[in-house]
Image (cartoon, rainbow, N blue to C red):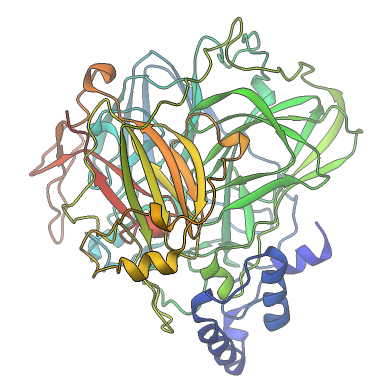
Length: 616
C-alpha cells in the first residue's frame, strides 16, 4: 500500500473539524447541485477531492488509521447436507488486530457473516432458519419513517433470509414482507434446480436490508454438480479444497471503539435514511485488509460484491492477468482472460488466478480504482483502494491447466443455450427524482412507483421477454430479478433530456416507463465478455438503456407454481410481535409473486424495489 493510499485510509474525527470548513464544504456541495456537474473520470474526481478537501473530505466520516495486512484472511467454514439449520445471532467481532471487538450479527456459530453452504444440483434441501438476535448493532440508524417500519424494529430486529440467485418457490424466496422476528423460525425448501454456481444468501427484510447486511447477515452457497463437484477429481480440472476460496468483499467505515458505522456523511442526521455511502476500508471475509499465504500454483476464487453501494473495478497490483470462468448463474462456455473486472453489488465471479509464475516472497494486492458514484463523489468520496494481499510461498500448489472450454466437451456440462428471440418487449425505468439544491437525499424508484403500488409487471410463464432498463439517474444501479436468470444483450446511450422533456415524469405513484427506442442515440454496446452466460443481476449505467433477455419459466418446468399465494406474517403489534412462531406460522396476510430491485441496499430500502408476478 502506498503512502498516498495510506493517507486516504486515515481517519478524522468530525468533531475536530472547524465550523468554517464544514460550511465552506456545504456551500461547495450546493454549488455542484448534488454532483451533476462533477466530471466522470476517476482522475478528475480524485482531483476534485484532493484540491478542495485535501483528500479527506470534512463532510465524510472516516475510519481511524489502520495498518493493512495485520490479519490473516479467514477461511469460512463449510456446511452441507439435505437439512441445514442456521440461526441469526447477535455477537461481538473484531475486524482488525488493532481494533477491539464491536457488536455485529452472524449466522450459525460465526460472529460475523455465515458459513459457506454446499448444495448439489438435483438434490432438494431445507434450511431451518431462526432469528435469535438481541437488539441491533445499528439500532440508532434505523429510519422508522421508511416503508413498514416502527420503533419496535430498533430492538426486535425483523429479518428475512433470501438465497440470492436460487430458483426457489415463492414461499421460500425470502420475500421482504415475510419477516422473521426474534424468537421466530421459518423453514425454507429449496428444490435444487440451479446448475453449479456461486450463489449467496443475505438478509432481505423490508427497509432493513442495508442495516442487517452491514451488520453481518451474509453468506455464500456453492452449488455443485457431477462436473463441478468440489472434489479433487472433478472432471473440469478445477482447483478444490484449500485452493478454492470464497471471497466475500465489503467496505466499511469503522469507529475507534471497533464498532461499525453505516453513516458516511454528516449531512444526514443519525436515524435518517442515507442514499448510499462508500466505505474507506476494504473488508474480506470479515477482516480489514487481510493477508493470505498462497502456494505457487492455481487458485479458484469465488468472489461476491456483498457491499451496500459501491461498484468496484478489481485488479491485482502487479497487473497480472487472470481468468473469469463463471458468473452469477454458473460456468461460462470458455474462460475470459483479463487484468480487471468491474463488479457491482450482488454480482459474483468465478475466477482462476495463477501464482505459479511469481517468485517466493512476492506480494500481490487485490485493489480497486473505480470512482465512487456521483452522490458520494459530490461529498468528496474517493475510491476505496484496497481489499487484501497475497503472499507467495515457496511450495508448489495446484498445478493443473486452465482449460480452453468449460462447457460442451467430454466430462463437461452442455454449452450455454443460444439466445432466443424476444416475444415481448418491456420498458422499465430506474429513477432518482432530483432534490435540486436541497441536501435531503431523494427517494429512489423503479417505474416511478412505490413498493406498495399495485401497477406491477406481470410476465406470462413460458414467454421470452426483452427488458429495456432505462437508467435516468447519475449513478449506476445493479438490477436484480428474483427467481430467474437472464442474458445481457448490451447497453446503448439515451438522450435523457429529450426523453424526459417529451415524456414528462408524473408525480411518484403513477407508473412511468415510456418506450425509449426513439431516444436511443448510439449503437448497442455489447456486454463485457465475462458478462456472457446466466445472470441474475446486471449493472445499468447512467443515461443508458440496458437490454436483457429473460425467459420466464412455467409451473410444469419448475415443479411448483411460481404464482402461488402464500402466507405472510401477521401484523406486528405495539409492545409485542407476531408472525412465524418457532413451532409454526400464524398469519393474517397473503403474499404472491417475487421482487425485482436495485441491489444498492440503501436504494432498495427506500422504494427502489417492486413486486412482480408470473401469470399462467
